[in-house]
Amino acid sequence: MKYIKSLLVLTFIYLLTSTAWAQTGHNISIIPEPVSMELTEGSFELNRSTTIHADISQYEIKNIALQLRDAINSATGYSITIKNNGAQTGQSNAIALVIDDAIDNEEGYHLSVTEDNVAIEAPTSTGLFYGMQSLLQLFPAQIYQTDYSLVPQDTEWTIPGVEIEDHPRFTYRGMHLDVARHFFPVDFIKRYIDLLAIHKMNRFHWHLTEDQGWRIEIKQYPKLTEVGAWRDSTLVGHYGSGHYDNQKYGGYYTQEEIREVVDYAQKKHVTIIPEIELPGHASAALAAYPELGCIPTKNYQVQTTWGVFDDIYCPREKTFTFLENVLTEVMELFPSEYIHIGGDEAPKKQWEESQFAQKVIEREGLEDEHELQSYFITRIEKFLNKHGRQIIGWDEILEGGLAPNATVMSWRGIEGGIEAAKQHHDVIMTPGSHLYLDHHQANPNSEPLAIGGFTTLEKTYSYEPIPEELSEKESEFILGAQGNVWTEYMHSGEKVEYMAYPRASALAEVNWSPKEKRNWDYFWQRLQTQFKRFDILDVNAAEHFRGAQPELKNPNE
Image (cartoon, rainbow, N blue to C red):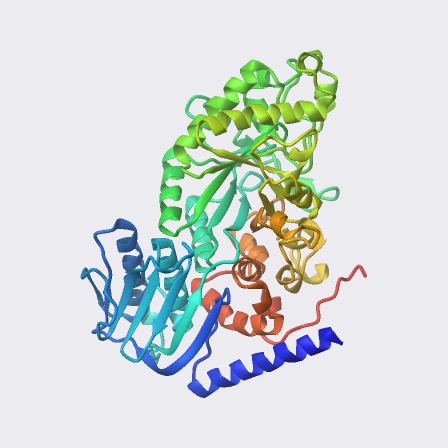
């Protein structure tokens, strides 16, 4: 009965809000949904005389003003200009970007639209950037068009009067991309970051090394890319029933390209978290430098298929020297506080059979190979901590004892996240049940090839990052959630976009909007406008979620 009453209240609010918007002639469709939004009288009309006011003596604010100007001019054909006047509110026919220290959330903003002007106020440039994203979503979807000649000439560049107070629920709002199973060029990585920024996501987890390929140039170890970046063949079709193409495949990012992408992401207020896998998922690295493995006579190979392999770094001093040197170059490229070190799916067979590994266990007074992995990861953590960085690891790093300052990424369900939070470790929730975007999202018979699973858009939208098992204090250790895109069966950027969107749009709202404001039906309504934006941006989003809501059931039930 309580559920029915709550549903009726939400439905009433939804209908009341929708009716109000219909009366104004505007359909406001902001994703993710703001904390507070109140419609006011009138509307603001953008025209050729509109100006942007900002304190462009500050580099980050100038960069936001330039992005806003370029977006408007590209879509409208106007040539509006930026005025450097200290960014005060109240100027006529102006859009003002104003730093306001009174707003207490560093990513928050206040967006005010009147008949005369627009003002975005925020305590930081990041807040201004997110306010700009909401402002753009108040305009017709054609604001995302980069060639104004393609925009209908009768497009009205007006936006409704509105007062928006907004800030994110969680500090970590992430998306992951595996570039090791399949490699994606720099232009696509930038496009991927663009889509994160539109959705106010602030973390890009870049999975750079794997058994199937090493994708980052390390100057001190050139064989990592000369050998480790290339495999002899690739599985075509599903694991267990496919065939191999016998075509050399690979690629990697130069350090110059990495710097280019990092700089691009910073302008979009996205922090890149690089992942260097250890101690497992090491086949590609060991193919390049076999002396780092526990079996000196083994002919290590870059793997041509998917799955978990026994290859693992041997806990020799030369291995730790190698990894520290690699991570030193990684830290020089990525300013992120966090470095992801993997720690998942590390079979212990080669350690069990290695006399050297067993001597390390005995020497260090360890109980077993799980504690050896903890010892391995703790050594890496101490090295990174010494350089002012923190580690993130998949939830397997809990096995054998958690490194002192580690952040846990909980993927095998939510149990690892619960355990870590109870130990007062920071946690990022990314359970395969809801946030693995390589799963089927509709009936597999009508879907492209995928790894399996069944995760609908509604299931992703329904995810709650804070487990009910946690106390209020323990809940503070949940930093947010992340969607993971593993690319065993994604050979192109178009396929990545199909699998990620619009489920990533749903995750964006899970991470940003207040829990009590999430409403599936209303999200679906706003998503239809988001599809118009996707169309203009040429995003290959899954069509299942366009138009009237279908009833998507698990075909296995």
